[in-house]
Image (cartoon, rainbow, N blue to C red; front, side):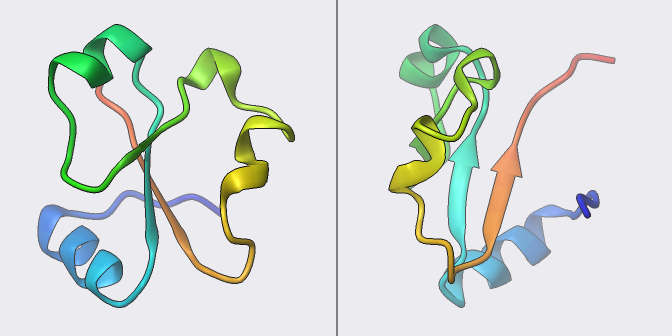
Length: 67
């Protein structure tokens, strides 16, 4: 179940081995992204694009919404 977390928790999870995935559009990811993040744009999120993720490791998903 997804839940919102803050920066310090993201850092802790990633340092502990979690995978960081950005679901922003590819152009926004190319412009600026979090260090070490994998890009899987939300519109391309499916079984095939997520197959490169390691199922045994937690996943932190980052998105941005101006609202």
